[in-house]
Length: 92
Image (cartoon, rainbow, N blue to C red; front, top):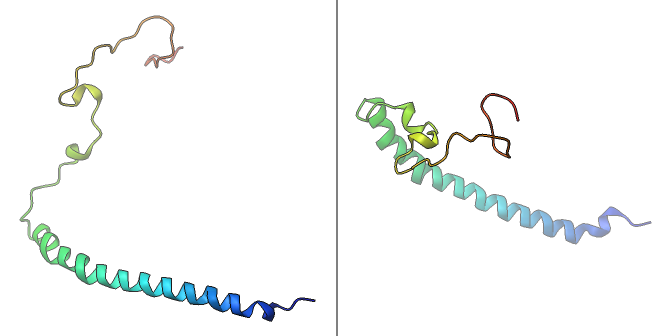
């Protein structure tokens, strides 16, 4: 019968690796919070709070149709007949 304790060195190694990885992840989170998040709050965040940024326009982030995109020329938008293209009237 094999006892679980016979695998102790390998488990100790795995927990050591896990501890080191979590240690690095924790420090990364701390550095990101104090080095990135807080400076963003103190600059862009406060500027937005006090109304120093332009108003948010949802049209700027909306996915535009092909015909609305700049620099796009739609050559063929109304297919006729039967084919592997999509119809807007529901039939194939």
